Amino acid sequence: MEGNIAVLTKGLTIAIGSIFPAIAIGMIGSKAMEAISRNPEASGKVFVPMLLASAFAEAIAIYALVIAFSIK
Image (cartoon, rainbow, N blue to C red; front, side, top):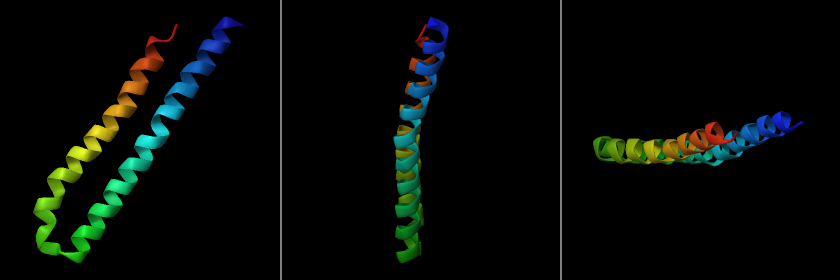
């Protein structure tokens, strides 16, 4: 019984920990494309901050994965 609870807890941890970073990455990409479409010359200035913000959002999902692996 305890094994089933641990598996459920791991699944919920990674599911909940991945929802908001996924939404954030989608919003980052959307706003970056909107900024580039409004001002195509600024694509170089928008690209690097977009990648950094996506990497930080993805790091949160990786933290959730590490926590899920640490649950016994």
